[in-house]
Image (cartoon, rainbow, N blue to C red; front, side, top):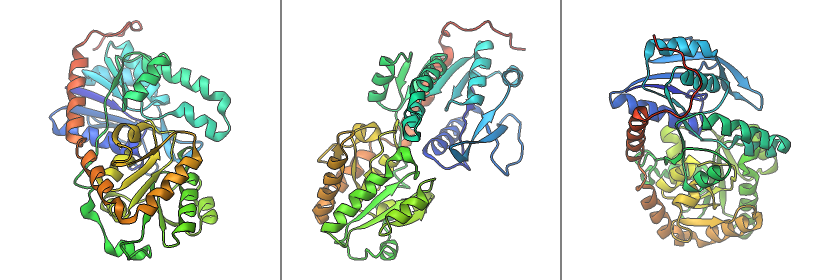
Length: 386
């Protein structure tokens, strides 16, 4: 197949969506498909426009200046794709560039598939813009309903979107690299740096952006409460973001280590004991699977990846949404289990082994091939392919 793969985020940006799109593009290319990657040019990158990759103009996102969005004219997409002649256009993220790409594909009579990866409308409430949530949701609905298929990561999200008027929604799960993220990455030296050399000590871990919508403060409050009962409890925070300086000031007993990548990130997971993930804004949350694969007991809100992959009481502990006190109590309970966490950690690893990336991406590849052969939904007047 010839696949035009459009995404507003991609490495060198570092987030779950960027890393997943990079893995997907690599998998498709290794499978023999011609993949034209279309993404915004990052700060300091050279321009590029060839059959492998087209980097459009990129600008900083106002609330996230470290991330960028793309801008390109619909006519440029039409011109490019009249030459490339893709069998399908896959759009991984919404944004100005992606909107232009979808409309260009529809004008050319090309099949389009999309991913629903981020609850952008839900973010509004964390930035005092709750009034904009219905408007953003309506824009997302129109965007995804232009496609022949909208892929979502969980069954619960599929039900929610269908009830909100999203059409042609299909579940396409996420995977995890169980070789990189493994209990075998445990590092005694790293634990010593955290002042947790004694294996009876419990190290709590958070991994993710330090931003309002991630609810990081709740994880740190849970750590404080556990530490009052077990003074040797440790907390390690992996990640960066706009809240980092404030959180470091407010929670000086926690160890903030910044962003970690590759083997270093895997070692941080495997050297901890308990993963705290209080976010309620996730569509999935790749970090949950990475923690499970690393053999961590997970304490998380009963949503997204945790709801789908954590068996509460067996491979982790889930708490209801919007119940902060329950989250804190559950984190304390887990910390007090100490060495009794071992069976839960073993079950966590076994759960992650069921969702390796190779299986997930093979299903995605097969579905793209099927979609490329299906009749299109009603479309705009079309422009002939040259």
